[in-house]
Length: 56
Image 1 (cartoon, one colour):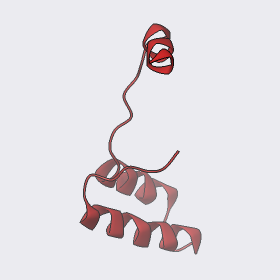
Image 2: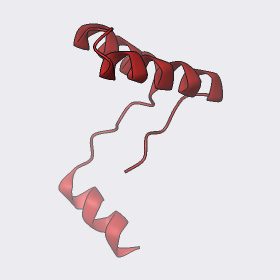
Image 3: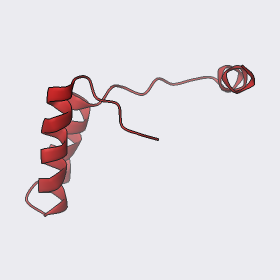
Image 4: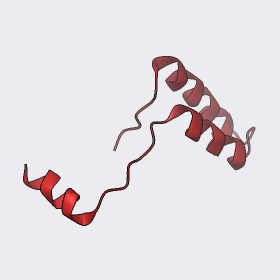
């Protein structure tokens, strides 16, 4: 599953932050804050909704 960003600018900021986190220069807490700021939220779905989506 690919990441969906709120905008292209936030995608660039998130990718830069991810590079810093992978290099050990940014804490996991700060990376979580970037995730919340830059990525679109994941919607919770009921099992019936998932089944209906797959059967379309």
